[in-house]
Length: 268
Image 1: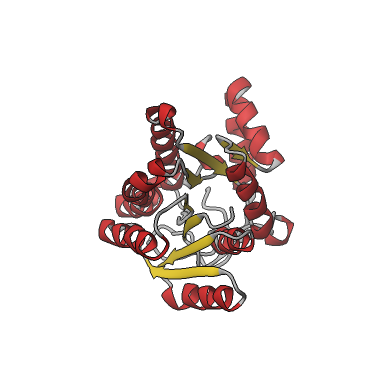
Image 2: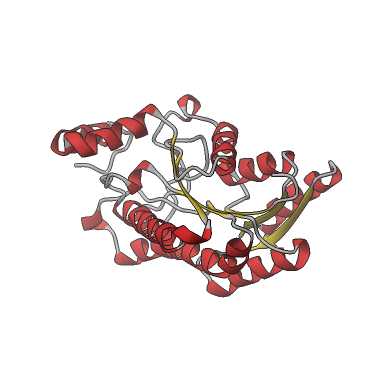
């Protein structure tokens, strides 16, 4: 990673923030992107004061122009892009029958179109440098999760896009990694959208029992260095993917019962 240029979206907290620190710590020049500019600017300042190289770019990945500006800023400051980590994302927790399509559109705009926009503008530099495109996805991209219709749809779409991109550029040495960290301690569940589009505020899960963002970032960085095509970290994730192949109907019942046990579950 020495002197590689790494863009990380959703870098203000959680996995994105941990990735920025992890890659910078290995000598990469990191570009932090998020809507919360004050937060990422402070992180970049700390990294720079530590002798590392970082810059912050205010970015709403649902806006095409913001994504273009992000990549242009990275190229102008550091000369190109070697790794693009599409991490920005939002979740939801509401039954489809109760949810406005606007909520699903918002998830698609951030989770799917944000990945498409950033990848589109970074692609010329990534191809030139034989770089890496990373999609931070979820088990929800392998198995449709109840009360997460928009989230699962956006992750399935991300998977299809990135897999197609990988095959298209098979002869050009573009590395494409789809990473499914599993449940990780982060703000993604606290900021998950409810029926009316507001954030749920409290996580329905025991956050202390989950993998830390720092550990996810470590595994992700190693996967980039080894140019892996997929990364599924938790037993829960690996079990889900295996069951989806061999016992899909049983998996549906297991997933339903598991999600229905969450505190304040939307299932009636």
